[in-house]
Length: 184
Image (cartoon, rainbow, N blue to C red; front, side, top):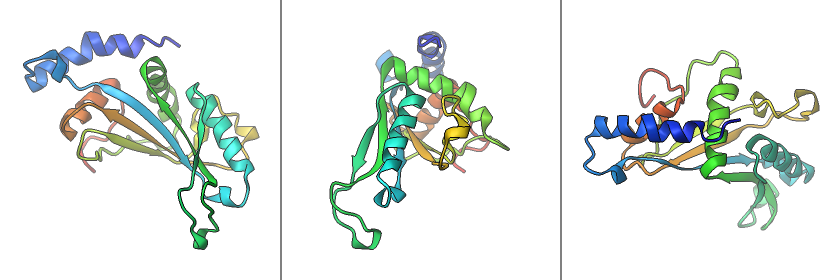
C-alpha cells in the first residue's frame, strides 16, 4: 500500500483547504492527525487467557504493528477480576503506519460493513473522535474461517484540533464517511 498517499494528500490538499475555511493566520494552527489508537476490551478474558493472545495476534495483523495486552488496575470481585490480569489489547499508531491504517480503514474495511450508512459524528469536545466497530472480520487480514469469536474494537482518532468542528472537518477531508448531520 502507498503509505505516503494520505500524507501527501494532507500536505497538498487538506491543509490548504482547512487554512482557507477557518482563516488561520499561521500554518501551525492547521489541525493534524496526531495518532490512532485501536483498542479491544475483552471481558471474557477473565475466564480464558487464550482470548487475549488471539486478540493481540489479530490486532497485530490488522494494524501492522505489535499489539500489547492491557492489564487490570485493581481487583473487582463481581467480575472475577484480579489486579494485573490481561483484559484487553491495544495498539497506538503514529506517522506512516497511522496513515496506512487510516487508508485501509476508509477504503477497504468500512465499505465491507453490512448495511453501512455512514458513521456518527459525536466528538469528545477537544476535536478527537472514537469510532466503535462491532466485528473485526471487516478487515481483509482476518480469515473469517479461523475466527472463533466475533470481537469489536474502538478506534480513536487523536487530532490537534482545538474544537470539534475543526476535528470533524479534518477527518471528513481524510475520507471518513460521516452521516449527513453532524453530532448525531
